[in-house]
Length: 154
View 1 (cartoon, rainbow, N blue to C red):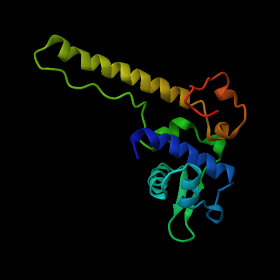
View 2: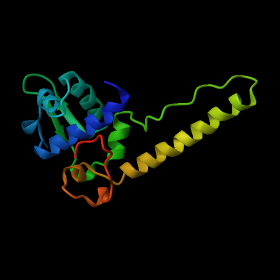
View 3: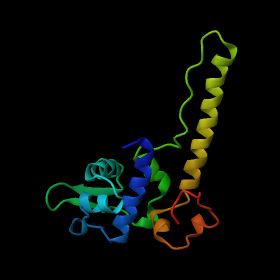
């Protein structure tokens, strides 16, 4: 799975667990069930859920009766935490090293890196205002007035 897909898959999986009320091992959702909802491969889900578990957002159990469940309420899980849990970023890239001896080549990569850091902070700040519970709500205040691009299904 590409780095750019880990965050949306993680947010989807957490929202699914919240929607299904998976707050204990008895309600654990198997990776195949989560994968069918995304849709993706169960291996992708297991990779993402391992990262979410390491961050303390969910717990997992392997085996035939295994699966994942939330360790926190959906209103207490902010999307910036999810982004960090899956090592996400704004995915704007990183500047290539400039040519040694070239005044522009030595200067521009630092400036581009600063701009990328600013964009990353802005993305994290925006995501810190949205929770998993907001994703499940019909009209959450945190997403009010946000227009979707044409390519996103409404």
